[in-house]
Amino acid sequence: MTIPRAGVPAPKYQRLAADLRRRIESGEWQGGAQLPVETELEHHYGVARNTVRLAVDVLVNEGRLVRLQGKGTYLKQQPMLDHRAFGPPRQTAGPQDCLSAPSEVYAEEARAAGRRLTCDFEMLVVRARADIAELLGMLPGEAVVVRRQLRLTDREPYSIEESHYRAGLAAGTPLMEPEPVPGGDETVLAAIGRCECAAADRLVARMPGPEEAAWFEVGPGVPLLVQTRVTSDARGPVRVVETRYAADRCRLLYGLGTAQAGTDAPARAAAGVP
Image (cartoon, rainbow, N blue to C red):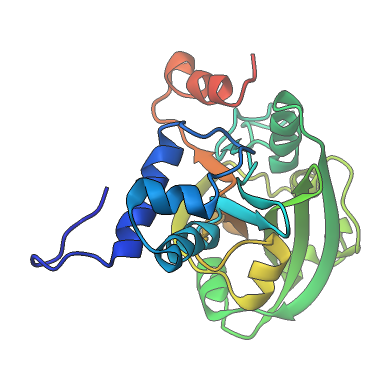
């Protein structure tokens, strides 16, 4: 679908890219299939070879196609993985249930999709960005503990998750250890009486920086989905979790309402979880 602007037709290569995109989305070519060679597209559309190459460049940049040297151009085999942004609550021994442990949700979804989830872990102590400091009720530049998880599915970069904690909250706890905590950070928080029982999300899309594009291995036209979650308990904010996903391989699922059939069930079905 193309959107005309003030009666001025789009360049020919953009119109060709739009039609190729339409054919891909309609399922005419399945994932992993080879795109017709340039001469075929030239004759089919009645355009010059340079027009074909420019149109294909657009779809390569969008992450829809990949060029293999000496072999041709193929549809990129990149299955979309659904992530339930809000999973069912965890039962605790305390007076109220806590939010689902994200690591458990990711692992369950990967298993349901028949994929292997792995994670590289880092712990850093840095000065808080202005936006993170505001969400945690701190001053910009104050120290925060950042626990970073680099998740991969079948060795393909999937997400970068960074949990930001006030240094005073993390001090003296396993959150200061440079390794994952058995059972997740949630177990540490519960042990110190900071059970996360509520959260608010902010979702934005933006283009990746050079380092992000290199890690995610995305084309220059593929944006990131950035989910910023502020968790809290009765005493206020507990942590800020910023998670970045490549938009061409992840879909975030949310549910509304309180009935089990109206919230978690569709998300579980979409993720292939019984």
